[in-house]
Length: 106
Image: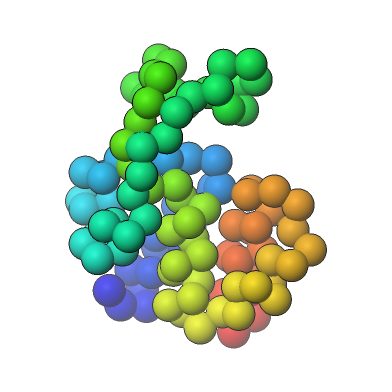
């Protein structure tokens, strides 16, 4: 992992997506991070925001890495005080945006 790769990956994060383990590997996410961050997630069907979509269809379960978790790891790698930067962020999308903005201020 180098700074340019970390910046590129952080730029891809939205806070609302789950990246497949395969995609993470292809994108250059370090294997140790994939091992630490991957999990099996279940859809919640009461609200659309809780439903997981893969290849334009709903799925009950999906194994992967939440991009919000990856964004935190990338920001820490880049030297951001993630707790301070995201203290007032409301929601995953806002947290990722705060992390991305903090990189611009370094």
